Length: 169
Image (cartoon, rainbow, N blue to C red; front, side, top):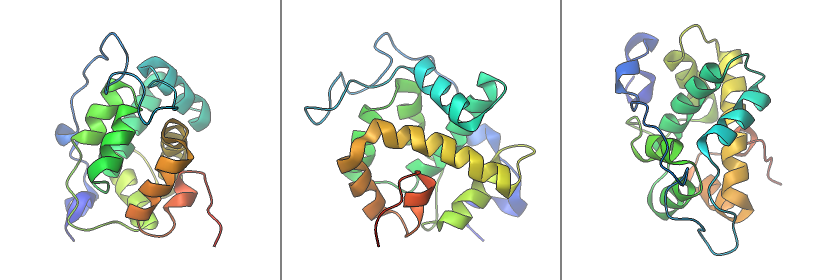
């Protein structure tokens, strides 16, 4: 099975983007994107939100989840939506999103969660679902409703639940 799930489910952490401290602005894209949306969130504040939503004991756990989930998400988004989401995230998160893991095919939400579990040492599918929800809900907040709607159009059915924003049928 190709794609981001890796051979035998073994994590290949060396291919995840290396940590790069955020720039002075804490974001990329120079401030506002799309006119009325708030400036990109700072790295520390975004990690705090991931840590809170994921109920992680340490910021390192939150950061590990954020790096893996954003790298996997970046493999599924293209064009203006990926660039616009990156512009609304802190620089470090944006760089991870813009330099994604490679996906041979779009992953269903279930396979996305399994791939996340394979990349996080000691994770199970259940804990990976928690990781995905914590990270993607923070990304959804940064995206705003219009961009999130366009992002969901690029993804297989069911990702709305992973972002914590169930869409009407």
